[in-house]
Image (cartoon, rainbow, N blue to C red; front, side, top):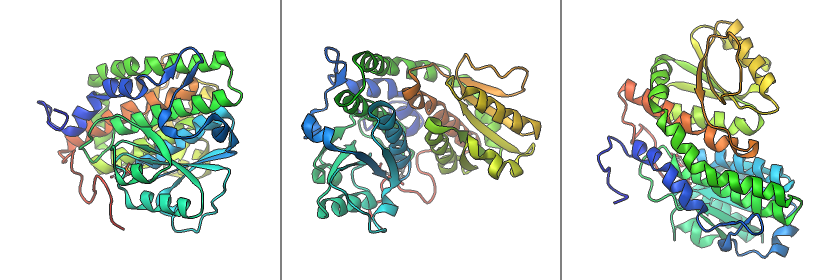
Length: 367
Ligand code: G6P
């Protein structure tokens, strides 16, 4: 059953491998080919109500917050509505202004995170509309929100979240598609996104098939004392999540920076002992990202690039992890996958308890 290890050494590994199947489950029956949109019946909001929102705000803790950032970018890309993400833990304490024309989206695997549940109550108390992206059916948050999208990732046991995060990002792809089609996203662009979402489960499998190459690079990651994860715009949350995973289970000190911010501080720390994991997709910002990698190399820093086949690094001596390309808006979903395997294999090399990292809980239900 879902709760058994079925022969795998760790739940985290089992859950990583389940992703193609679980990512297929979250889109099943929800993509509408006729109208090139997504059908999300659990939202409990009519097209008219949805169209009236002028802003979307994502709230979550830890990795759920980072995926909220991916969601916000998807909303801005596809629906052209201002959107952002904030840690629910910060939001709840700062007397937030709740606006009637903002749609709040809380993001939680467990549906039990105390800070996120409190944010829901605060929004509702002030008359706001809040929907959830939740994995556990019938959980506290799922019961309290006005509507939402269930993630269908199945039970997640490992403290380090993998398949639930992937399904959050898939759900936000569908949600942004739906919202986009209520606004100005064309039929053709709707089809482009819808078809790309359908292909993602198989593309995740392709990445998982390249595990031996990623595991080899993880040997090097495990030797690092410090690492930077850098990514630009859509890929900044990927860098944040990658750094978080590495910290959580391998205890290698890792920090994420927007690639564009490298020259505003972190470059001072680059030397041969500093490892940089750079997320460099084949998109309109590729040449700028390649230039940043050059800057790191010029200072003797080692680089692992998570990238696409078409990106050319010339003669630069770097390690490359190549992932399949999807549509640019959806690239983060696939670029995140290798960071799971990097963290997992680095933790294995270092002999840590992958499923139960020290000092951390799967679900933080207390203050
Ligand atoms: C804890 C876990 C994280 C998780 C966060 C939010 O801090 O260690 O992995 O991202 O809670 O959990 P949730 O269940 O709300 O997604």
